[in-house]
Length: 197
Image (cartoon, rainbow, N blue to C red):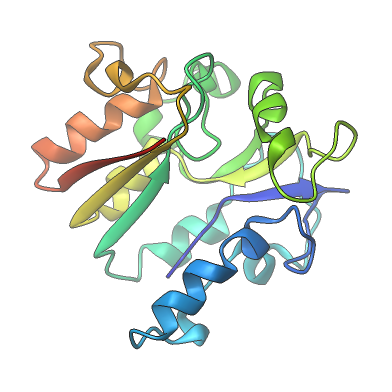
């Protein structure tokens, strides 16, 4: 199990022991999976790959891209952001403005800004407050998903403030990252939408 999404503070992924971290957030799910035979040593957050060098804004995480190409991806779980910013992972609409002149297919994992809409939405998460929602995060991109071509993709739309229409949008991936799901389906991935109100 690989999860690249993680908040960044002081240009490092925040500690897995930090209540705000995605590693902390995922603990109940990991425990459930372990009861079904999942092995903890197969679980990776960016703390492992990114601990030995400082991160920087919009940095491409090629070390992650190179690592993930060596594994078979049976399933990918993605979150969908609020309708004001319908990102997948932390890859927000218009993200290609940070990579001018490059193709979205060539952009893999990177250090992304956490936009204000998302920061406000995440204030209700455990351990968060107005001053402690980080401004940056490690994230995958649509290019990452195209590279690994998961056999099964689950898009989890948690809460009422989601716009599922973005998935079938005719906008290009650089403007609307969620439209990668149509491409993945055409490439043979099975895509399932899970809504949790």
